[in-house]
Image (tube, rainbow, N blue to C red):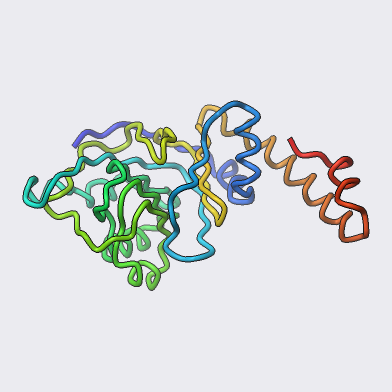
Length: 222
């Protein structure tokens, strides 16, 4: 399996992104002309939220019996992850699970923030019991053994048509998943936090009786 490199953002920047909703990040990325919002995957349970740098995994799929079982080298991919990382797996959207209950438990024990899967996951009850956060294209019972070959880790992948590069910041909540390229992460965080401050001011003003129209005008979004 090919292993690329990853440059993780600093702790302070990651902490900032943990406070920013994906809708706000969508506004900022839209203003910058950067496509970075994933909208067509499903969470394993309501209320999933996480943020962290992307560790990417690329796999190829085929019918049962195509690949030796050891070529689904999930453990090797997990070994390169650090606490707080988001595992992003791309198997081309196939209805095959590339993460199940035991893998989720191992990821949870290692301290990963969550997983985003362009493909399938299974053992949803086990995933939820251990508390790991998974957002996937499909939740299916079909296993990976002899059907998936993991070919690369920490290389560029695509999820829902959105490019994800190792070290990009992935933020997920009940609205969507936002992928913020590392090269603009600091600028995006600064603009998004300003939007959040305006939202807080508008919310407080509306609670005091200001109309939405007036609050929207006084505390504009991007």
